[in-house]
Image 1: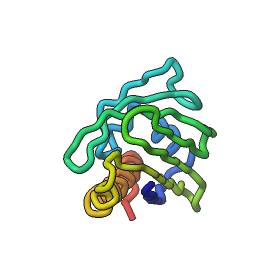
Image 2 (image 1 turned 60 degrees about the vertical axis):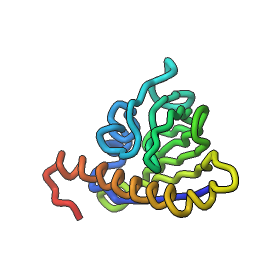
Image 3 (image 1 turned 45 degrees about the vertical axis):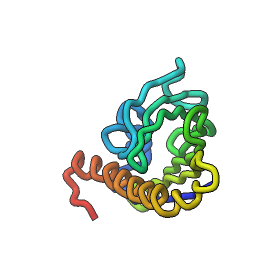
Image 4 (image 1 turned 90 degrees about the vertical axis):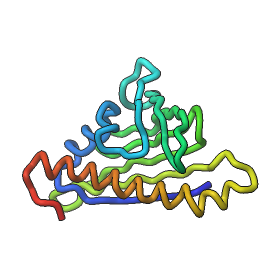
Length: 152
């Protein structure tokens, strides 16, 4: 499995960052490379909630479904794939000075035998790194725009 991790500090309280980032209806506003989020359970947030969506990488769009585990309000959660590309994500939120340190960690495996590791190192991994960096910057920018505070 490939592991990717990216962190960013956002100048907003943990509860505000967490509540915005935990709302699946907001993900398409800031998370690049994913779209068409649909709730697939009666649970809208927290343990057991499932979301179907499309993930786009290497020029391809693939249907994915993720189930939420280990949900702790204002701390984070784990997302585990139930359909599509095998993956596990960890969303972590912690106080940092007057703001919030948000860390997104992802593990995934391309479903391509033999060439999978080559395709991953040449194409998928660099694309996912850029997607995560831009997405977390988009999230930070949401709070900069909301508060009128200049970005760092």
